[in-house]
Amino acid sequence: MEIAIVTGGSGGIGYQTAEALAGTGRHVIITGRRAAALDDAARRIRAARPGCSVSTRELDLAELGSVRDFAERIKGEHPRVDLLINNAGVMAVPERRLTVDGFEVTFGTNHLGHFALTGLLLPALLAADAPPVVTVSAAIARRGRLEFDNLDQHRDYRPMRAYSAAKLANVAFAIELAARYEQVRSVAVHPGTATTGIQRHVTPVVRFFAERLIGLIGQSVEDAARPSLYAATDADVQSGGYYAPTGPFEGRGLPGPAKVPAAALDPAVRKRLWDGSEELTKVSY
Image (cartoon, rainbow, N blue to C red; front, side):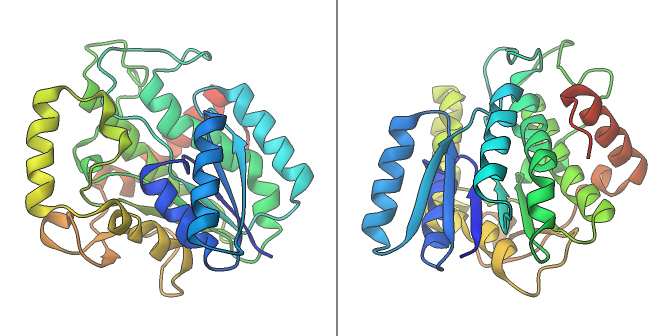
């Protein structure tokens, strides 16, 4: 039985992704920070997909010790991992916060945590046949900037600027992983527009307008999971690609190829991000 890992699988797009994968005969491992939420998600998946195989593991991507413990446990239980979906994330944290390792929490969770996790699981991934590694970004990545002297956002912190930088880093990482490891099918996606738990930090005013925008161009959470599932399972998906909904403003619609943020196409930017991420996380690929 193939092994699939979905980070942030207890709710939102991650949950929908995990449920769909559980219906394909894979053993799906969903991760999250809270055991109660994970147990509830696993119960709902089993009810929706009778006979499926699903398990849970606690994982805090904002804490490298948790990432290391999780990876070691997984490799001990499953020497081969066939699919990794780097889905979990935080958005629009209102004030600058640091992880226990001293990273700005948006960049630390969305990028560095997944960078470390993928690197630590790489031996198990390479034991599989062309395993997909899907990293979930966002449309706002095209507005992101990687200020290498300000990755911790110590200078003029702004919630959405921090988020867009982290989402750009997700795309750059996925493309660079594909370039460095031909044995892995590394793909970035963005889910389009939907209301999920990731928006919990935005202000009431922003939420008000966002919900109305989603009503015009957005989609359900179930549909927002389609780019991740497409990237994970469709034979036409190309390693190093970027996929998103193909409808109006990339807010909804069937998934297909999307325009890559320009900075993520620059090999020098990707190398600098990769080298810096290895230095910060102490995870060497």
